[in-house]
Length: 363
Length: 104
Image: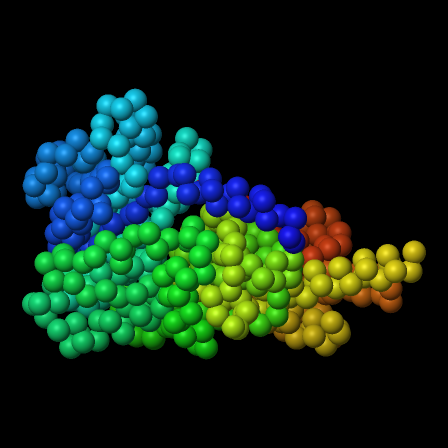
């Protein structure tokens, strides 16, 4: 609906003013701190605040970062995903307040490093729903480290590592100088878990920050990396490899393409039904949607559990096929149900609109 | 959409919903209705889409169980959303459900 464009533009501008927050996660020993240490030394990352979460009273990662930067804050009273989500919110509020007062160096980005055992989903949920942070920060993405040496075995043994990889926007494959990840089929397995996330091999944490940041959903350009990643996903089948001995057996990625334009009301109903019925088992949802009311400007949807980002619009379609595309990362939900549900809801809304239009024409 | 479209979709929709809800139930057809018989429960739940020429279609969810549940379900549901909520309430009244939150 063209009359909504000024509002859309306002939302985009508002989003651009919010401080982007990236969650850096990964299992114990997977190379998070090494990666972070290299990242914060990169000139492009000079204006970055870091929040480090460690178990125990004495944190080590701060020392390992070899920095006394005042913009690095430790949270070591527990695990973010378990007990100290409130502490995280308070810490972020405090960081933002100190920046406002000029007490600390200005920063235009925040990285939160989780513990190795953290489930990132509750953290994302907290970041997206806290009223005190609303309007001040925006969740830009999740970067997950998986190491080439132990990554496959860790996925076998630890459900946390599966969830960390499944919800990532970028997977950083570390220690590739020590082991060939192909030998353990790791890249293929990560792709099956999370087909929309690029897997980026690194050694010693060396990577261009541009590959990890500034590729978020708020870039209205259809040329953004995030959108281009969408188009590389195979939308023809479930990305679920059945092997009952693996923890990732219950984590499923389901991607599908939808060729019919979707009514905005139908999309809203669809998302409401997903939130109500799937809730905690819907780990992440991403989509680019062709709405009947906005055929030239696709909508981007992005959600975690029952929390959905406000819809955002791209200026144009990134390719010639103006099809909607959805990717769901779930815990043991039937992927085909999403398509059936969208089809039913969209058909129902179309019927209602057609009946209303017929009535109007008769009047 | 035709009644055939909806009859086919309703069965698939409820079959998937049972998996989403983690509820064991037998799902069968009885004419245009879908019948759900939860494991261990005696009273089945019937789901139908009702159409009349010229009128808006609606859903009904009914049960032969006690009167309180029957009273709860005794209303038409305008859309899939209400229908699914009613079916879940009928099969698992204690289920924890969430609501959509639009967050940052």
